[in-house]
Amino acid sequence: MSAVRGPTTSRNAVALDRNELGALLIAAGLGPPLEHALISLLALNGQRVSEATGADIDHLGVERGHRTLTITRKGGKVVTIPLAPRTAQAIDLAIAERREGPGFLAADGRRVDRHHAGRIVRKVARRAGIGKAVTPRTLRHAFITAALDAGVPLRDVQEAASHADPRTTMRYDRARGSLDRNATYIAAAHVAGATR
Image (cartoon, rainbow, N blue to C red; front, side):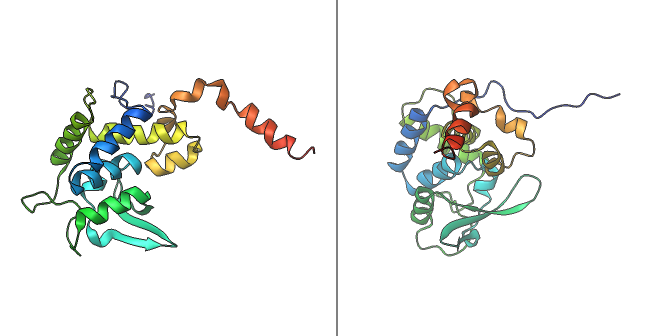
């Protein structure tokens, strides 16, 4: 009988707290539009670096009042995601007047690849005064953790992160042990509303 492996995540991954993530976004906003757009997409939308760098301008759209981006997920699944307002604005500035081609262009006119994206993330992290080894994956982790810390339901975070297994998403829930977030309080408040 073969052993079944659970989901994998990098247990020794560098983590950013809310303040560090905020500092990173501020530093990105003070840099060139490309840096701001890329950092925003990775940190506020939790995209994998391949999803972000693979995006084209014609993948941008509007759906039911939301700015959207159609991306190809891990495994080839194509999905349309809403963009955080800050991300949408940053992308608009980065693409400027261009109407086609890659969403993220390097100074030499080529598509930004994952290696170039990693250099951008490290440069912005240094500019933000963050001494940790920050990578695009760090920003994805920070997005997932921030969403869970903010109280976004696990299922919604799992979907946003495109995790097949909820146990993968649960590994990011640093506040899981917090008594303040215990379901008892939420359920009691909900039921109390019906007893008045």
